[in-house]
Length: 96
Image (cartoon, rainbow, N blue to C red; front, side, top):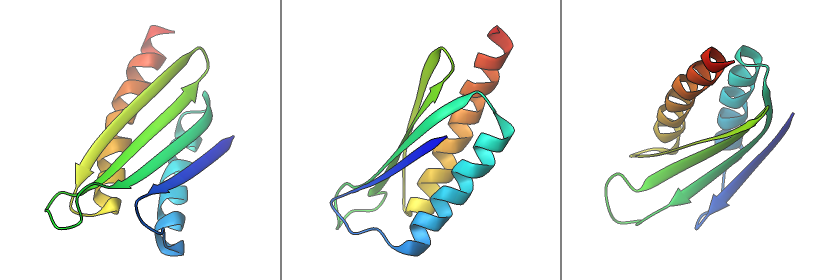
């Protein structure tokens, strides 16, 4: 399984990278159909609230899933996006 993490408009810390990898790893263990993951972390407007956006794209066998969430912290945005993807993965699993 391939994971790509991109930081847009900021320098990513090792702590944030480890957090994202841990969450993605947990998701991949739960849903084995995931082939690759691309995470885009973007700083939208530095001076505004809710300025951190996490977009996660999953390549699943026969399908592509995407979720993007905005929050005060990248950790919170990643958690929200993964929660949305879990719902999509459950629906995808039910269809098959």
